Amino acid sequence: MNKFDVTQRLELIRNIKRPTVNDYIPLLFKNFMEFHGDRNFGDDKAIIGGIGTVPVHASPPSAGGPPREINVTVIAQVKGRNIDENKKSNFSMPHPEGYRKALRLAKQAEKFQRPVICLVDTPGAFCGIEAEKRGQGQAIAQNLMEFMTLKTPIISVVLGEGGSGGALALAVCDELMMLENALYSVISPRGFASILWKDPSREMEAAGLMKITAEDLQGFGVCERIIAEPDGGAHLDSRLTAENISKALAESLEKHIKTPLDELLEARYDKFRKVGMFDFIKEGQID
Image 1 (cartoon, rainbow, N blue to C red):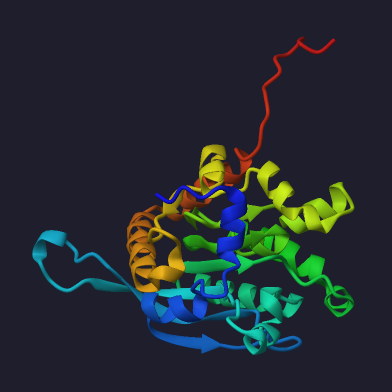
Image 2 (cartoon, rainbow, N blue to C red):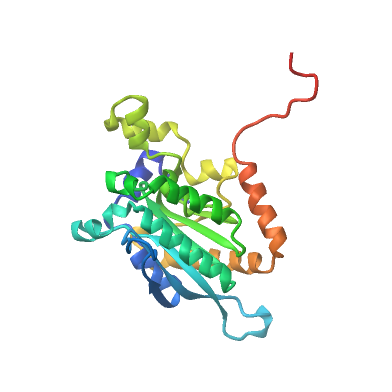
């Protein structure tokens, strides 16, 4: 496993050569077909969504036949590799119509009993005036509520940046995975520094305090699985990274699609109830 500290990881996940969902989707999913629009305002290019298939182990594995395939719904946040791609995807900062598109596709997946795969990679939801006018906060809150009770398995993978509610809106799931150099936090380090010290230039210092690495979050019970990257980072071998993600997805899908729905939903609820630090106080213990 790579031994990068959090500030090095912050630089690494912002490396312009780091693979994005445009690299991963063709490697992870067969027959991917994109769907567009939220059926309300428009199509947000910061979130791509559609359906595809994921190969899993032959059933039974000893049969030696080709892997079977599971139909899935894919919802992914889009980062660009150059200024034109970043402008098209609004630098991976979704508007409310992006989250409404994601919810529309998730509800469709529930209807047709398809598992949902979310690929998270955003510094946060767009906080511009137009986004606020169109209900940014409400759209994110709606996703949090609806994904919590969605009657189909949900697996989320943090590929790079998992910033604030913009990431959490696609990370209410049964199993959260992170690439080993990915970061996931309630606010971006720059936002943290801006609020705490009124100085966004101290984001590297903030990152060191926030406990936002994959190892930190696995220790807190937020992340269930860390996916290995090639030595030096995912940009050095995107195909190998995709193979590691694919293997993790196949194992997780096989586990969750066999879980009875009532048990799946109860476990999802318990997963988020356990996040955080708390203690139990016995009756009569409070003065």
